[in-house]
Image (tube, rainbow, N blue to C red; front, top):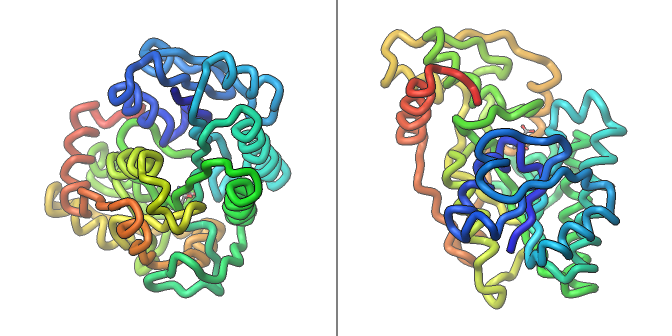
Length: 316
Ligand code: VAH
């Protein structure tokens, strides 16, 4: 029985229905700071929750008899730079509260780390699973803090903590809000709507990306993995591709001939992108729990454009 925080976000809005299909709707309690509508609310149990409220959080987990907390609530990288105090309060205090609830209520705990947990002094190509982590965003600082705290809670209290360093996630259900990799989602919507896109990230800026379907499989694959195989826990490097705006534009052009890309670089998000790795080494995830993404740039592009076109180009 699973409690998911941040259920209305880019990952949560697809992970909750995915888990309900896998485990049964009544086994997955979706929570978010604000009420949600549609499938999330109608498809199974929902409750409002501010993850910083430990009392309310513990009560929800206890009454739902949860055995797992999947904690997704948080602010993304660019938004965090605009409100550092809020980013720290939600991403660190909120996540530390969630982890303490997991310890008190005896549940397993999933934490979403990110390629943002690395910084400019980290090796950029084939970034190792274990390496220097000196991120230069408040979002990244929070991710490293929680990676360390989750490993500590496992070591000290035996909490079954597990995490993934997500790359940029590309999806067609719910738009990400305030992320640096959001360009890689917007470009698909604009390609369907207008046949062109103006990117806020410069050509030649490579970042790890992955289709949302592979991210959902990775969460389930990790949480269901045999703990005896896990050498690492918080958090595994995972990625499906290392791309820049030009590569995505070229893949789109093969499906929508005449698609054009232009550039109007946003200095804030460009600087964040340049502080992150170009490509991750995902060998630990492959070895310890058989991580194997199914989508590459071409298959993801075809499916993204099909799904967005079938929605009439509207975001969720
Ligand atoms: C962001 N999409 O851009 C998130 C993610 C890897 C990037 O953490 O902030």
